[in-house]
Length: 115
Length: 113
Image: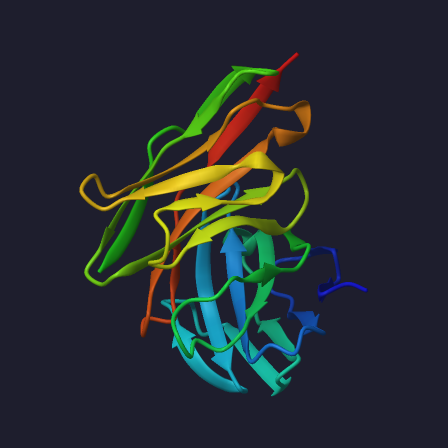
């Protein structure tokens, strides 16, 4: 069974379009994250949710909107896609930070290409 | 504030020789430190983590790392490299209450036959 899954794996779209990436985890974790990995492999956190509440919102354009319908899902919707949005987007999850940072489990990534 | 510096962007070793991937950190709080590995076109997998227990941490696949507070370092080592170790390695720092993981820029390990 896949622990953290993302769909789609690849996404190719035109500038200006709106797209969504879905993430699901079956680990029973309370905290979920979205990361962006650029072409130089640099990983930067975008959002984090704990028990469906937003706890981290980094300096991300407001064209990006996360939605957490329940603890097992964290989706990412992107409006008006731009060339610079091309990257690999990773979803991750972890147990709640009751006694400090916990191991994160990562999904396989979604490679977004904006033409 | 927290930051992490991976001192080498690329490391090449011969199969069977030791591996050393260097990481220095900065943290205003008592840090937790992690090493993750990313194989090509895959997600990240935890190798090991330090969370203020033993300073020498053993991980999967024969990797280990030593937390040295005086040197603010958390270098990753393995006695003998295997071809399957070729991947990108990330050092990560975090701290209680921050809810953030700060990733280093990664070190690409190449293993030569």
